[in-house]
Amino acid sequence: MQDTPTPRKYEMQNVKSKKKGRISLSHTSQTVLLRQPVLTPVMVSLENPDQATVAIRVDDLFSFRRQNLPIVTKLVGYQAKEGIWVVAIAFAVARNTTTCWESAVYINPRQPADYQLLQQLAEQERVPFLFLSPRLKVIVEQHTDWSVLQRQEVRVLLTRVDHTLLGNDSVGGIDTEFVRARTEFQALYSVKTLLTMRPYGAGRSSSSFGGVVLD
Image 1 (cartoon, rainbow, N blue to C red):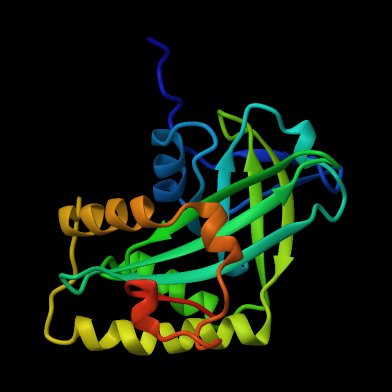
Image 2 (cartoon, helix red, strand yellow):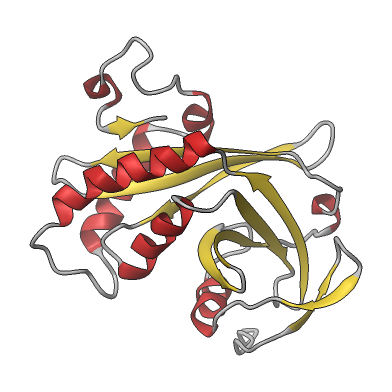
């Protein structure tokens, strides 16, 4: 079995800009990325600047090098019957003129680090996407705009989430209740469905979405 590389501060080659640059991924973020399978998106926080960022290890960096790579994002919140919230950032990346890759990153508001990511998303004007080589040594940096409307959606969602967190201690380690809620959410709605759902309030009540809160 191949050993997992030890997380450390890498001097990465930023393929997009052709310049050497230090990407400030924390030790924790690197560890999380290295533990996930390739093509599994993870939401992390960049240290400089302080931004919520989607990071993904990929085998083929070349297809993500296209300048101004088109990326579409959609914020979705889901509250399971037990009151557990799952927040997803669904996205589609046009890798070339014929191939579009769709995926989603899931955030657990009960985890302090994830809650902080949502707070960052309520303020920042764009979402960086970092496509990294499997050993995190090479990076392709892209980004997509995060509009005023999307930031407002996060603030509204945080208000709803806060009501369920009042009086509850934050959850550390593996949150089995969140895992069950996320599995339930994924079984109900594919990523393609999340990306094409009608905006919340556009002629349908929230209950029609089974707990999904849309923009």
